[in-house]
Length: 216
Image (cartoon, rainbow, N blue to C red):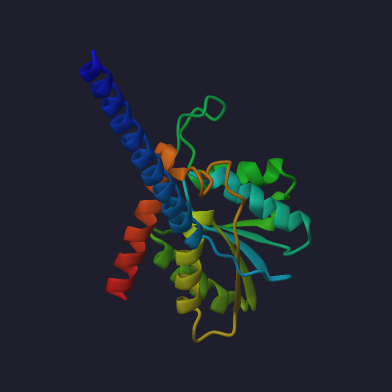
């Protein structure tokens, strides 16, 4: 009987130790995951600009378009520019076709109060942030723009800002960047790892940053 009680106590002690270790590991992981995600998030406020540029992003086009519309309503810029990643979304029963994501972004903007006349799409397809930055550099030079506010999602913001600043390094065009708050289409830094979409955003963003750094 005495031996049985001792074994039970020892087993309970092992369980408590394992639970404590698991809790500590979870706490450490949560902190590292939060810090890793938060580091990706930057902004570069610009009071006003000649145009707001909404970068393509099929999984986050709603939050990006809504952020751009909010900036437009604040009077931060008279124009919104959309890039075209040449990707189509799901079937639209209203239009009886698969609209491109830039078309869906236009719908979000107009529903948010942005007049169609203030929206412009650059039709040339782009396939990366680097493509978008190069295209906007050429567009700005041609149109004589002096300032841009780039709108993208939170975890894309650091790489996007770096890419645009590099592309415009020899230009006099001022580059600002703003992003929508997390919690809509982008999971928050504290819980991104609990969402499948978070794993498609945060770790992938680090891989893309390494690729950009190596190929620079």
